[in-house]
Length: 175
Image (tube, rainbow, N blue to C red; front, top):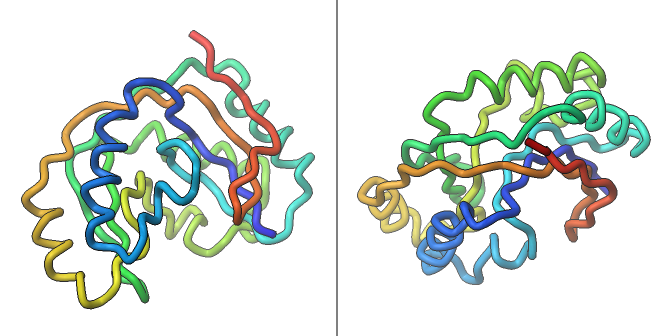
């Protein structure tokens, strides 16, 4: 079962993302993000085989004294996988890349899933992840026409296993 370190928005600033989840779900067979039963988030690193204790120690070291992060988003982009994935693009991802690098300073990037490695990782907040080919063009047109300009306050870091999402350790970011 894979593990991940995830930056989570567990407060009222998540409302615009939840609205986008509902809107984007109309292009899916069933709502993929609501099915997770998990808050809007940014996945920082995914591991197929790493000791949870290493995840916990890394989360504590990297985030233990960090205040909540306000991340501004500037639009919707996509990954063209087997199914289309729609995601929100951070306006400025420098702080996220610094955090990502700090995680990889603690856990060997070679242990990380290839898409979460420093040379491949794209900071993003997913809004739909299972859009079939027959809805692709409509979904992309909607994404292009839909403004996604707002800020989210990320106030929790979770060490999780999935699927289904199970929180193994939580680190609250405190002001």
